[in-house]
Structure formats: structure tokens, C-alpha cells
Length: 115
Image 1 (cartoon, rainbow, N blue to C red):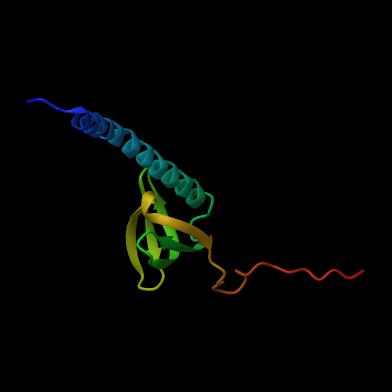
Image 2 (image 1 turned 30 degrees about the vertical axis):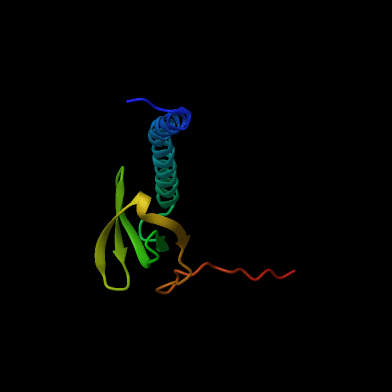
């Protein structure tokens, strides 16, 4: 089989593209790992029982409390249906502290300063 110059160039480009694909995949996996570690650290800052609002990567929202944290996932008590859900850290897009206070004395205390 004999290749002309155009065929040789096309073959070289194809080989170069095939060689680059694993490098691109490795970079995207490291970004996912970094995001998962960031979400794990963020969730670990909150006390157990703190009301949180989670936004997941599949565009769903959850409101509830974190029950148990592990290396790759966590158990979340969903306040909407009282179900315990297991989520991977990589599934979480964002975490925000809930602003709803339930029960007497659970809201932040505001002191009135008299001069």
C-alpha cells in the first residue's frame, strides 16, 4: 500500500489525535476529583443537623440535613419526604446553608444595643 503526501499527513494527524485523547480524559477526571474534594470539605464544615440546600448536577434541588460523611459519598436526610438519600460528592453542584429555622431558639439571636 502506497500513500501519497495527503494520505501521510492524514495518517499522522489521526495518530496524533489518538495519542491526545487519553491526556484530555485524564485532565477532565482530575477536575471532577477536585470538585468532589471541594464539596466534601464544604459539607464537612457544617454541624450535623444543619439545614442545607443542595443543587445536584442533574438540575434537581434537595433540602435537608447531612447525616453521615464518608470518603466518596454522604447520607442526606431529605426534609421534603423524610427519606435518607446517598449522594456522591461529584454529584453535588452547589451547597448553601438553609435560611429556615425550625423550633424556638433555633434562629440567630439579635441583640439590641442601648447606648
